[in-house]
Amino acid sequence: MEVAKESGALLSYDPNLRLPLWPSADEARKQILSIWDKADIIKVSDVELEFLTGCNKIDDETAMKLWRPNLTLLLITLGEKGCMYYTKYFHGSMDAFHVNTVDTTGAGDSFVGALLCKIVEDPTILENESKLREVLKFANACGAITTTKKGAIPALPTEAEVLALINGA
Image (tube, rainbow, N blue to C red; front, top):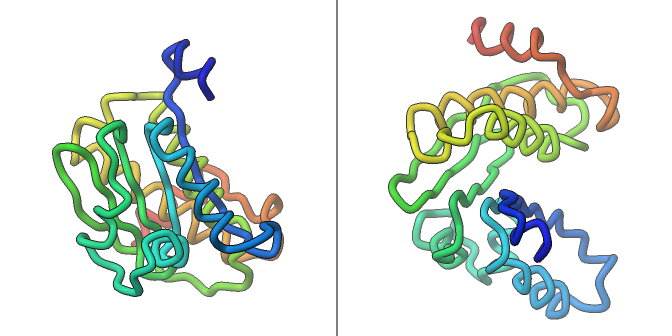
């Protein structure tokens, strides 16, 4: 991470909490937060927000407990309720697409992959709320479609599938 940061890379972090893989919850929390000040973009789920903050409310006040000055974007994914986003200049939320869910495996990864792909194409997305909202809509559609099939990789959508969902909604 340090070499990438020194080279000017934009660093994204998704802790993808799996407690059984850690010796203890305290160790997991400590290690996850140890990376916080190095990342530019952080995505956590609502469950991870609760775990990291110790607060069971999913709101702006709780989310801001995870905000650090180095961050460009903090995202909280809310499953079928969409996502919340925070930057230095604006914050808000985006609704999810409602689909027939079969398996949620890979939905968060699909969401983050779509977001990062769009940011690589146009880094100004992070400075423009209307652009960011369009990208989050696209990312939410990717995550939603991923839940309609079994398995993380086979369920990843094509861009055409994503655009069809967006345009049909």
